Image (cartoon, rainbow, N blue to C red):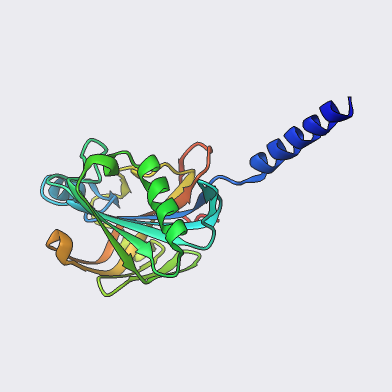
Length: 227
C-alpha cells in the first residue's frame, strides 16, 4: 500500500508539473507590403501587384518548447512570394528566419521547432537561418524593431489624419493565429536582405497587424492597442 501511495504521489506531482508549464504565448507583429486597413480604391490597386513580402516577429512572454523556456526571446521570419501574401491563399516561396544571438543553442533550436510547428509552410519551403541581434521594444502601439543590419521599423497608432478619401475598412486578416488584434501604422521601415534579393522600404502605411499569439480566444479586431 505504501508503494502504491508513493507511486500515486509521484504521478500526481509529475502531472501537476507538466500542466504548470505554460504554452508559448506573447505578442505578434505582422507587417505586409500592402495596406491591410484602407479604402477600397487603395486596396484594389495594391492587391494584384503588391504584398509580395511579409515580416513577422514573435515576442515570447511565457512558455516553453520541448522543455526549453522561451520567455523574453524573439524570433522573426521574412517571407516572400510571387503573389500577395496578405491573401490567405498565397503560399510563401522562400524565407529567412532570424534567431536571437542572445539565446542558447537549445533555445534557438526550440524556437525553430516551434516556428515550424505553428507555420507548416516553413517545413518544405526554402529556408535560410540567420543568427542576429534582435532588438524589440513595445510601448502601447509604439514598436521599435531592429534585426541585425537588415531590418529596422517603428510603428504608431492609426490617427484621424491617416483616413483616406474613399473610406477605410479592414481588407485582410492576420495570417498568424491571434486573439484580439489591431492595425498599426508602419511609420517607417527598411528591409535589405541579400539572401532573398529583397529591398523593401515603406512609411505611413496601415500595414501592420499587432496582436497576441498562443491564445484560444476568438480573434477580434479593434482599432486600439492590444493590452
